[in-house]
Amino acid sequence: MKRREFLKTTPCLALLNPAFLPELCSNLYAFDLPPNLSKVEARYYEKLPDKEIKCHLCPRECHLGDKERGYCGVRENSNGTYYTLVYGKACAVHVDPVEKKPFFHFYPRRQTLSLATAGCNVNCKFCQNWEISQVRPEQVQHFDFPPRMVVETAKKYNCPLIAYTYTEPVVFFEYMVDTAKLGRRTGLKSVVVTGGHINQQPLKELIEVVDAIKVDLKAFTQSFYDKYVRGELQPVLEAIKLI
Image (cartoon, rainbow, N blue to C red):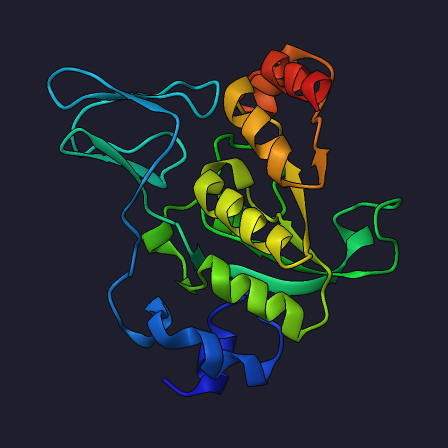
């Protein structure tokens, strides 16, 4: 596949510029390679008898048997161990102004290196990034972009900020936390754009390693969340209070 043809077929893969393509696209599904998913043990889950697990990352508290995936589609129980399939597997990367996140009073007029993986733990009917949020990782083009490379790329493009955005960063929690920790050690700030559908304990850990969080409060009623989001309002309100 020629690069021109590749660019025509990947509307949801946002890259920095054409010169950036050879640097990152070594494992792209678009080049007829098998989907190169990660297999990194997830955090915040409980092992149960008979190779079952219970996830404690978000309010859904998925109870899964062997070979089953969580509601988000990016975390899988394999033989009683829960894995994230999207650690270091970015499907969208772009340089954005921080105001586009939107953050208006945090490092104003600065650029952010923004990234996302596939997946989400809600199903907003109005999602503008549904092509990458409402799919499993093997259904979207992605490439290897581990924390070290994220930090190096942010510095290369003079971005003082790394933004976890576009889909739902909660579902790539381990990737986000490790990247934020590494970025902080090198002087980079981390910002998160989230729907706030996260349990209190992982949120407390996240708060310790990132510098700003913007919660998308979709509405003020549970009936709206039932009809348009397929999520719970109360955990979002509790997340906002904790932040």
